[in-house]
Image 1 (cartoon, rainbow, N blue to C red):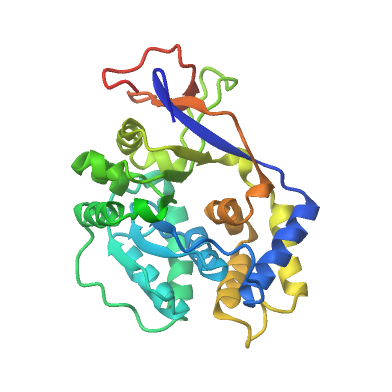
Image 2 (image 1 turned 60 degrees about the vertical axis):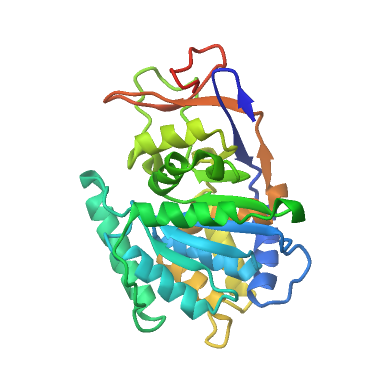
Amino acid sequence: AAAAGGLAACVAAPAWSPTKAHEVAGNLDAALSKKATAGRPHESDTLIVDTDVGMDDLAAITLLAAYGFPVKLITTTCGICLPGSGAIHVQQLVSALGLVPAPCVVSGAEDRRREPYWEWEHEQHEQLSLLCASLGAPASIHAPPSMEAAADAILEVARKKADDRGETLTVLALGSMSNLASAAQKDPCAFRRIDRIIFICQARTPEAKPDYHHLPYNAMIDPEAVRVVLRSHVPLTLIGQDCYPKLPWCSALADDLARAGEAPTANAPLTARILWRILRYDPQQVAFDPLAVFYLAHPEAFVDAEPMAVRMSKGDKWRFEQCTVADAPDTEGV
């Protein structure tokens, strides 16, 4: 939906509680052990995952496999993964999970990491390499990283969306929006066939201190890409810090899975073993990108805020922030 002077974005606010942790763990345990059939997504729902390939991203992809969501395409974007390595890790995971039909994996923009995060990103990369090495031989990705190739792949899926059969197309934006922005600029009409984008990011609230420089990671990597996607007017759902469960909730989820007897055992499904390994590395990895999957699988755990106008300001002190519809839009109406 569009509002005068900007895009109407919807922020999902959580209703996390110990009870909800047990409910999610129970449903997740059933999905991991393939006991659940009810609540599976309709086959007309199609997903694109645009990921910067962190540990939480791999957890999200594993959860999508466990819940049975049909992923058509996975594109890698800049952020946590080192240049050229993201698509290889994703292909290893997809191959190991044996997804049918297997999503296409395309190596997109992977070259805009920021120096202040290099140490953290390097630690993530080491853990990713260890995890993916345990899944089998490295996948063969013949094409070098290409933002244009990722944009073309996104547009191809959008163009083939079967509106006459009620097919819906959702993009899970789990990293920077570089690939999505490239697609929006290349073919705006095809890009608008996307029904919604779920973005793991938070807009600065009006209550924040005036001097607070809001730098959400997924927006910081490529601020201009966020501006381009806002101008596309594809409906945007933001899931940000207000939604992140605290460590005790994440630990409770891991403990519940352990007590269920599935995750730690050698004969457990691979989805369970991968998720357990990620939770053992850091339980809070389930608090970030996996929330996009929980939003799809457990909408009752979230409370949708009223649609709101957002903007990406310019300059060195840019802000991705909520605004009022009375605020003057830019020359392109955003």
